[in-house]
Image (cartoon, rainbow over all chains, first blue to last red; front, side, top):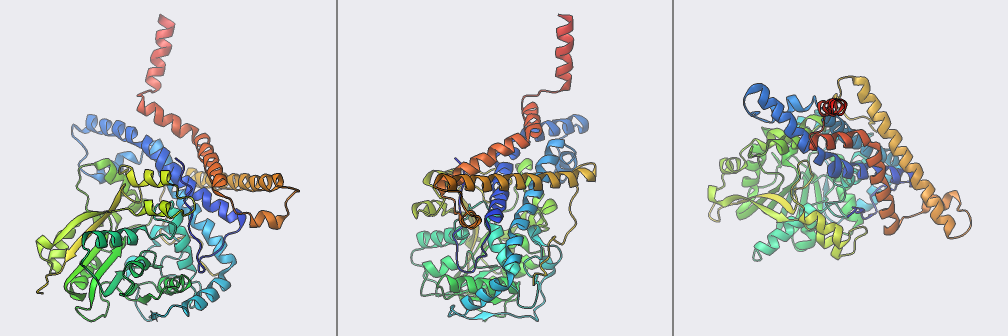
Length: 405
Length: 114
């Protein structure tokens, strides 16, 4: 079944010309091909190279680093990895040209849409953006999350909005919000009595996963924070354009400045793997400090490596080496449960679980390109190494703060 | 105004033994993208023509593909990749089937001797 999932337009999103659209579709199709066709061919290549290693050394490779050493020499792997990199570069380039073409009007539109959002926008130009964001441009996006072409310019956020859709090949839904939506479903279905009144989304970027919280908990105050100014500005405009009152604020998740005990629910979506060894424990501590007694912390990201499948581990870790994701691998070596315990959570109140993907709901809602068949295929597929999302659901780390804390 | 950064901060990794091959690979993929773009443009032209007289440039620009069109184009691109990656696909099959040059030589020898 072909995937022709399409992003749903919204007023803040840049428009693409006929050829730009075709280039964007090409980069998405190429990613499909790499994942669906080139990646499966790599498994037997790995087995063969591994056998060679065992013959030479008289033992199995001990970790993914040793696997990398022999795999990078294989011509098939070189073609797989370089194609993946080219796809990533083509993806950003295809979106970048469309944004450059309409940059002044994008900024004007964003300012107008922002005025429609009744919740506050907070931008802090004096804030020092952490080095883990400014060191290299994460996932090779030119300019990175926090880059600005000019004062107040939001181009990099528009680039992210469209680019991440193509990167995820539409698996995260027409509004790029599958992760937030899946966590919302998880909370409402598993904890029907939990009614959060104040919700914080950490590392929200353009608010993809933030907005579902307002939809599922309309009476709650919802705040998205991010270290990158352009992202929160665009997020505020995007929400305004979609008729939603959600606050977006430029703040550091490790040191938010919010009052202690001021949130019932704190969430993050694919944030942790883009932080650092020092920031991640600090974020857990900040979550504990900010939660009301009985409150919930939910981080949706990937769980630690269990070292049972060196091939998958090696493939996933390619992001660290080839896609400017410096913390992708190291994050998965960290004991997240222990980090939560160190932050103050009780051991028995911290666990991993799976939040089923909401992708089938998009097909049910007749979103363009989201056929039942294609969506089922995404939702039911087995985990394949290197996929953006593991099949079936998102891994969530859940911490429940003691009611008597 | 632009001023947008075109290339990401962070050194580009080398995948092949010869860095020239990395450059060539990128150029091939850019060309492949443009071939696909041209094909889509021609496809738009044909679809609009089928509906009446030759379309204007504006009509081509404004064309929004429906799901049937998206499906056909996606299928065409996946087939294009299969052709473009002939050698890589062949290699994957050889490895999966444990086919190699030693086996080839063995067949030559066997054919000559038997």
